[in-house]
Length: 116
Length: 115
Image 1: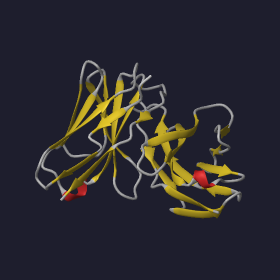
Image 2 (image 1 turned 90 degrees about the vertical axis):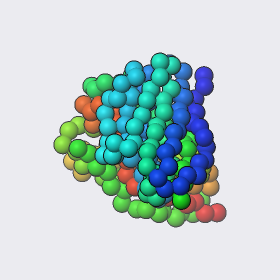
Image 3 (image 1 turned 60 degrees about the vertical axis):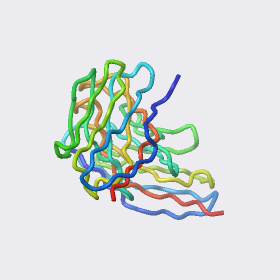
Image 4 (image 1 turned 60 degrees about the horizontal axis):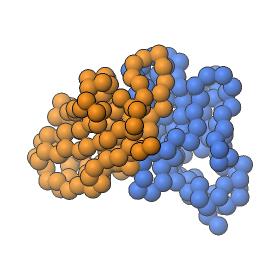
C-alpha cells in the first residue's frame, strides 16, 4: 500500500509568481485535505476536497485554490505569492468525507515552499 | 469553532525521565482529540487519539493521554523517555460534526531528550 506522496519536496519562488503543489492520496482514500505549516507553528487547515468537490475551507484568501482529480490526487495552487506564503505545505488523505464520522487523516511529507 | 493551546513551546528532559506535554482546548461542541508527532523534515504521524469510550488512551510506544472534559485538557505523558522521542508534538482537535474531520492544531511542543 502506497502512502501519501507530495511533489516537489522543495520549491523556491519569487513574490508575485504562481505555484502548483501536488499530492497523491493513499490507495483507497477519496478525501484530501491541505494544511499550511509556517515555521515554528502548527499546521493550519486550508481546504478539503471530497470526491472532486471542495468540502470545507479555512481562513485563506481566494488566491489559494485547489483541485481534485478522478483518481483522487489533488493540486494546491497559490497565485500572487507573498513572502508570508513561505511554509511547509502538508497534504493529508482519508477514506471518507462528510460530517458525523471520523476517518483518520494520513499525512504526506510536505512541500517546503520558499518565497523570496 | 475550536482552538488548541499547548502550554509549553519547549520541554527539555533527560533520558529515562518522565515527561508531560500539556494541551488545553476550547470548543462549543463535542470533539475528537489527537496527538501527532513530527520528526525533522518529515510529515505528521498520528501518535494517539480519543474518539469515545475510555478517557485514557495509549500508543504502542509508551505514550498515553487522558481526556479530561471538565478541564478541557488532553495532556500527553510518558513515564520514561528515550533519545528517539526527540521531536515536535502537536495536539489537535476535530469537532465531531464538522466538515469531514478538519483538524485544528496547537502551536506545537518541542521535546528534546538529552542523554
